[in-house]
Every structure is written in structure tokens, then in C-alpha cells.
Image (cartoon, rainbow, N blue to C red; front, side, top):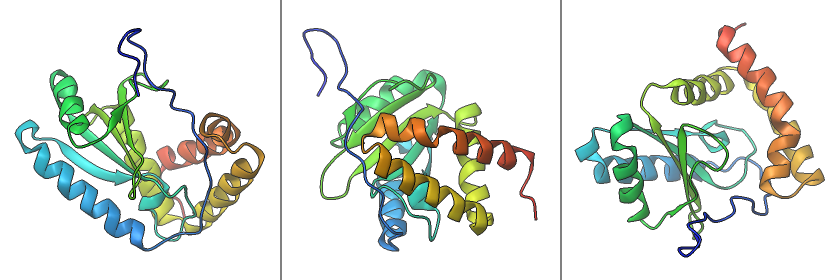
Length: 179
């Protein structure tokens, strides 16, 4: 939780583990997209299931990631609406241009609020779609994720260990779907 007295945000670092793909993640992602879309209809927000749980067959942290895109002026209002759905707001959590919210309950989820169609929005979509189109790359990414989780079982260290692979995949994704 944020510390209201200091104005600080909660620490985004947390334990992390990677699991074999679970087909239920697709349904959980669809349900969260539906719920957010309904709640945010007033903002004409676009909502997409992203991250590893959105890629069939990809090992992942068992946390559904969804991005919400809206007009920049609406970001603070959208963040408040998502908080009202039981999500904890952690500010940008080190990613300028994105507001990060998380829920750690029976169905853990992250919501990333950002400018619709902006660079972060496009990058997340390109990365997801590239992994969906390239099972060989998704398998390589899964190996990297498992190794990172074994070596550094907290989120920030895990993310740092897989950053090089993410950058390589992102560069390939930006250059096109490939063979």
C-alpha cells in the first residue's frame, strides 16, 4: 500500500515464479478485459490482454497483464476507476508514460494504463503478436524466463536478468514477423 503520510508508493518488487502455460489464463484475460472495458466505457478506453499469459503455450508468471489505453488527459481518472476495482496503484514503477496497478488476490493481475496508440502501447502489442506468431521465439523466451526466475526470484532482479532477451526479441519484432 502507498504510504499516505509520505506520499510514497508501494514497492513494486515482489516474489516471482514462472509456471507452465495454463489455458485458463486466456479466459482470465478475456474476463478482465471485459470487466475493465465495461468499467471504463466512459473513457472510450482500449483494453488488451498482454504479457506472457496472453501467448498460448508460453510459460509465465501466473499474473494476468492487461493494458488500458486512453487519452492522456484521462489517465488519472482511469487510474482512479481501476483503483476502485480493487487494484493498488504503484505509480509508474520505473516505466515513464505508464501507470502501474496490481491486484494480488485469487486471480492476480496487473493493469498498465497509458496513452492509447503511444509508443508503450504499440511496443506491447508488437511484442505480444510477435511471440504469438513465432513459437520458436516464445520457447526461447520461456527458457530465459525460467532461468531468470531460478537465479533471481524477485520481480526487479528477474526483469533485469531477462532484459537483454526482451530487447533482442523487441528489435526482431519491430523489424517484422519474419519467417
